[in-house]
Image 1: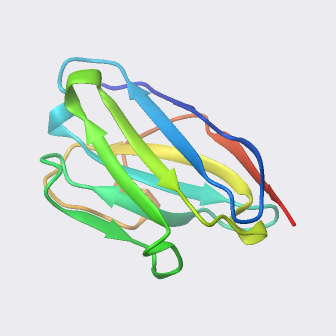
Image 2 (image 1 turned 30 degrees about the horizontal axis):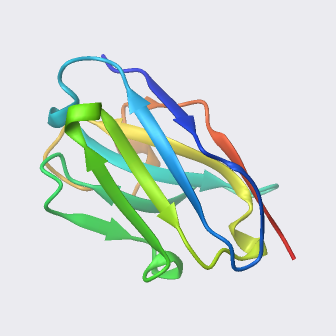
Length: 124
């Protein structure tokens, strides 16, 4: 089992940047593919980015390609989401998730473990 704790959210102006972190407990972090999802007000949870357990494969939602970068540091049991050129529509609670698989999924139900989320607010 793995526990996930997100951090790094906050208030930023349009065009600004934030880096989210997700710290995982446990000694088998490198056996989990990791994903970032977000849920805006009145919206369903949506896929943002994911990275394979080896770090060799990544996947991004179309709207995030070129602006967001997912990475992982297995020595620190942490996955990151670097977000640049932020827009008001990026405002949401951002969640990290873990899946004990070699695949890189975009669907929330594929992930077994979830953090509690961190709020990102982008002002116009």
